[in-house]
Image (cartoon, rainbow, N blue to C red; front, top):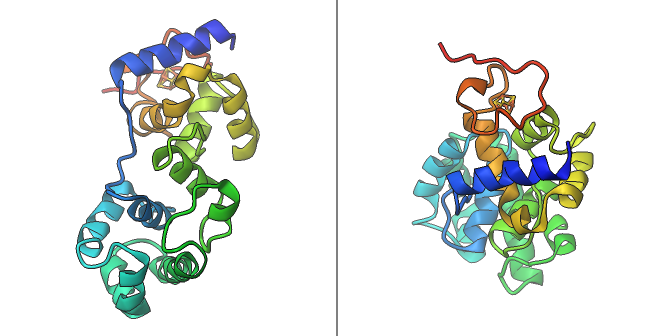
Length: 213
Ligand code: SF4
């Protein structure tokens, strides 16, 4: 894909949604961090339901530690893999209290050192809480980047690095939200909605099809 086409795609996505953000509900960097840790292999809707119960009761490292592991599990037991996630959240809270004055750190290295926080989670927090141009490549971004030809890659790291290099600077900050939303609602996995896709004429996917009934 040439750079003019890539720029045109992001310009259209921007016009359609000038201020995109995560669908996870949060009001502090700590709430965002917890929500992202809980969201692995779970839907944002499901996470929002659980955090709507949890955050009014406990939304700081100290208050979650006070809740205790079993107390935390009670609030998040509707989410996939809640046992492991609860353990990671407890360990992360402990680390934040002990090493970061109960604040969420703002560097990749410090974030990735927290239990249960991988590269993707760190990228979401860096981008959404701290305004860094980071690219959190999930299954949607991976699919959309490869299908359209915006940034092809064999694995998520390759796609992330290509997006960081190829997306025009003015769109970098918001690009991952646009691509996630496009993958979630239009360029869906099994039946992409090419017939209503606003970048259909720019997309280089060879098997474009309108799956709308
Ligand atoms: S045209 Fe189809 S394959 Fe291309 S981005 Fe749109 S929905 Fe996805």
